[in-house]
Amino acid sequence: MDSLSGLTGLFASAFISATIAPGGSEVVLAYLVSQGQHPLGQLLLVATLGNSLGAMTTWGLGVLAAKKFPVADLLPKNRQKALNLVRQYGLWTLLFSWLPVLGDALCFAGGWLRLAFWPACLLIMLGKLARYAAVAWFFT
Image 1 (tube, one colour):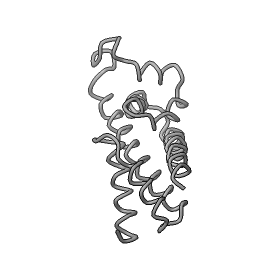
Image 2 (cartoon, rainbow, N blue to C red):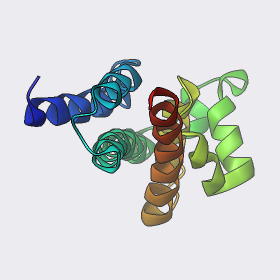
Image 3 (cartoon, rainbow, N blue to C red):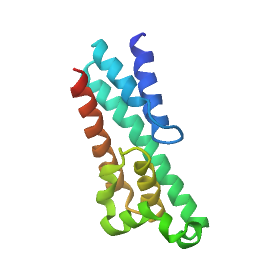
């Protein structure tokens, strides 16, 4: 795998993992870290950027959905876990956007509830970076 295709694949995998399809980016990152062909910082930057942009896409979909559907009408009360978490803890919940399944719901809820864009983006990126740093550390 050449240098550019490895980074492009990592970015694409990270972006898709945060939007429409589950998992995969951690495996790609682990492989690239174990190959030692890229600086670790570069790999972390590409993975974090891709995954964060994917999460912010989900956040944006939440903003769009909120314009058309009131929260109370979309889901029964017992199905509003992510919305309730974001209502209760606010922006800080977005640090957990890296969690499987729940993380996507938190991003969507953050957009739906119209949390501030730049702080949301920063907290999402920090959570994603921490997860990727842990994966990279494990495979170095």
